[in-house]
Amino acid sequence: MAELSSPPVKKSGHLYQLIARNRLLTAVFIIGFTLLLAIVGYALGSFFNWGLEYYIILALFIIFYNLVLYYNSDRLALALNRARPAPEAEFYQLHNVVEEVAVAAGIPKPRVYVIEDESPNAFATGRSPKNAAVAVTTGLLQMMNRAELQGVVAHEIAHIRNYDILLMTVVAILGGLLILFRDIFLRWGFFIGGGRRRASRSRGGGQAGAIILIVGLVLAIISPILVALIRAAVSRQREFLADADGAYIVRNPYGLASALRKLGNLTGKLRTASDATAHMFTANPFGNDRRSVVDLFASHPPIAERVRRLEGLTID
Image (cartoon, rainbow, N blue to C red; front, side):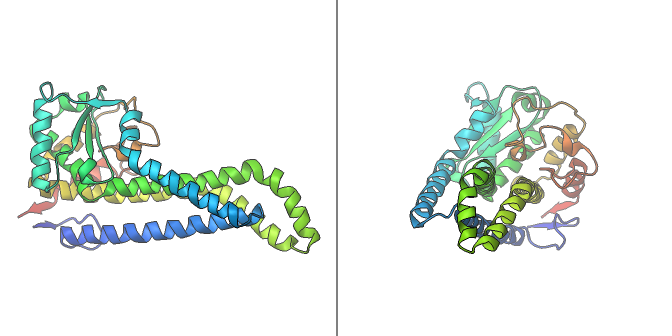
């Protein structure tokens, strides 16, 4: 059992209760975001005066889009970060650590990848524990001792076990669709919709058209901000939980705390990282979490705060 003397959430509780609450919030988030997406899609259809056939086409497109990203999210993440399979003969200790942590976590051993980069970092990907992968940089392997490497790997396997990767994939899918709808409105709305709005006004529908236009304009302004805020907030929450759960898996919070302290003293950036994948890494690949205060759009909480909470854990 793990009790938190400095809990990663406002209310203390058993670790599994925190995980259950995390999953409940995930379900609430997905339902809420889906409803928002449906409202936006309906507003877009009303703006363009779509008939039933257009909504069917849109629904089929969304299903296809979701399936492609859902089943290929791990491959895309690994390719974007230039990760390559890690041969077991060459990276024996890494494979050994990943396997022992996976056994302790009760999940299948993830596939193991390396990224040729001197900046120390790691990430996990995969929609479920059965098809997950862990990737670490060569810089991490060179810098960390075994206990620290074990702590980092446990953090990433905690993400896999808690289905955090699936959630962040859903965030990316829904957020991408929301921004796609925004772009459709901006690029085509004033051209295609203009004639239909004038026709609507001639039929007495000018007020409704104006409301839809305002909704579209507001969406165009806030959708990127909304997506970034939600993605950052969800990611930060799960970093704290993965820290605690990873420490529980290996029965040692100090390995990860020591690894994070080393990462906090560095100033280098990961060359292969991008804004689209920054939230996936153990530490922010651009170094933004080295500061004591992180803004609302940050993908990671401050490293110093993560270390403080880890060192406050008591593992029974």
